[in-house]
Image 1 (spheres, rainbow, N blue to C red):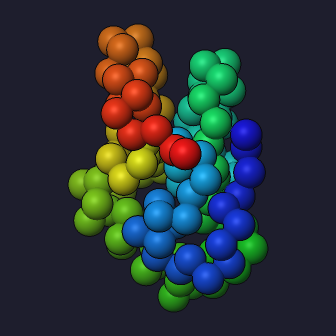
Image 2 (image 1 turned 45 degrees about the vertical axis):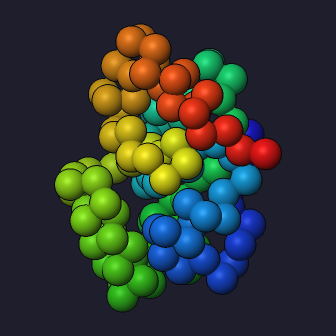
Image 3 (image 1 turned 90 degrees about the vertical axis):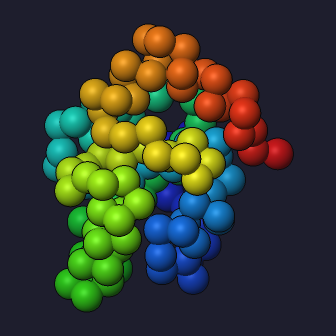
Length: 116
């Protein structure tokens, strides 16, 4: 459930989203409390997700990290992490994902964007 995307050649957010085997892709930081909270929420809801921690491994390399964060900002309109995607659709951070789960929007997005 909580696994890093296996495609080591994926060096863009769009590539990560295309390579994800789970219905949800989470971009996070290892030390971030909201990132931990959204992971816990997804686990409680039994929603499989792939995770990319942008402050670990090769993603710490400054140029790559800056490129990925810039791409995320352009796609989501947000400078903050976590960022949750269902398929290629941005749900938002913890607050938006939690609200989407409460309202049924998250379940609807999952039904409309299943991973096979």
